[in-house]
Structure formats: structure tokens, C-alpha cells
Amino acid sequence: MSQSVRFPYIDIEPARPGASRLPYIPLTLTNGQVAVTLTGLLDTGATVNVLPYAVGLQLGLIWERQATSVRLTGNLAQAPARAVVLSATIAPFPSIRLAFAWTQLDAVPIILGQVNFFLEFDVCFFRAQSIVEIRPKQHL
Image (tube, rainbow, N blue to C red):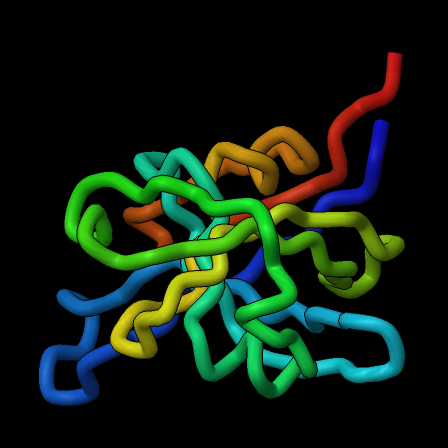
């Protein structure tokens, strides 16, 4: 059985403690020699992982060099997006490759969705306790 790690939910609106708690987890994204440490929102309703434009630029990505377009849905349906693959580390686990829809929007958090975050990790939400638990997928 793989080791699991628990993270507390984070209040995103300090004026509404408790009511604004969401399951953000710390992670480090790496592109070549450039690494950025930040938090990502676990979103079971998101089909894909989403990367805000400014974070992609911090990682040294160049929009014009990303040839594969990605079609986003929902609130992000009008935003252009390109496919990028980055190395991601969630301590204490080994790095994995995550595919992102890099969007030209900045008013969006890093979203960790079904493809491929939830394909790489088992996740348990304990909302009443404001805790999320993750562990790497089990290889059979």
C-alpha cells in the first residue's frame, strides 16, 4: 500500500473563514531547469489540468511554440489553450508528468483535473474535516 499525505483545505477569502475553504495542494512544476512552487486546486469536475498564462511564462513556455490546441469547456470555453506537459512534484512523492491546458487567462487558478492528475493519484476528500488525502496510484 502506498504512502498517503494529507493537506488542509485553504481559506481563499480571509473574510469568510471556513466557508471559503477549498482543496488546494502544494506542488512544484518544472520545465527543464526552471521550477515554480505554488498551489493547485483539486477539481473533480474539471476534465483537464489547467495552467494560467503567467505561470507558463514563469516556467519559460513560449505560446507560439505550443502547436497542439486544447478546447476548454464551462467557464473557460472562450479562452484559447495549448497542450503542455510538465514535471510535477508533490512532496514526498516522486515527480510525475502532468499534461496541462495552458490558457491565455490569468484569472484562473492552477486546476488539477481528471486528465491527468486524477489518473495519477487516488484522492479522498474529508470536507467536514477540511482535509484532503492523496496517494500515488497503485500499479498492478
